[in-house]
Image (cartoon, rainbow, N blue to C red; front, side, top):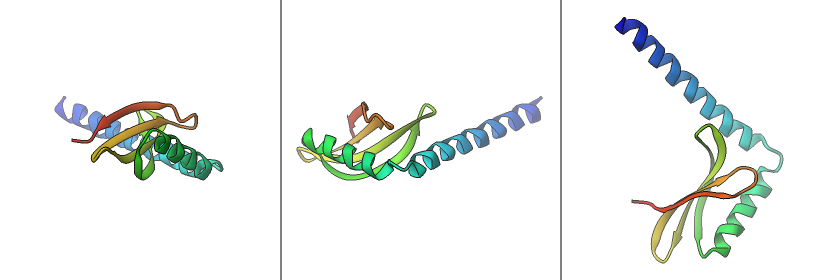
Length: 94
């Protein structure tokens, strides 16, 4: 029983990692990626952030852009839905 459970956990972990990589690949392969990344940068700058980097990622199986930015001397982690660039989460990086 333990072997079956362990095998199932390993298979689930591997499939999740593959799905995450696939989502990131989809974003980077999007012909509008650079344009959307620039829009995200402008959006965050208009909200007073200095953006360090923006990368493709997934959030609960959905494509997102993850930004590392600074505001008032504090570092923030910000997630934007992709490709519509709505802010999903915005918080101080601890």
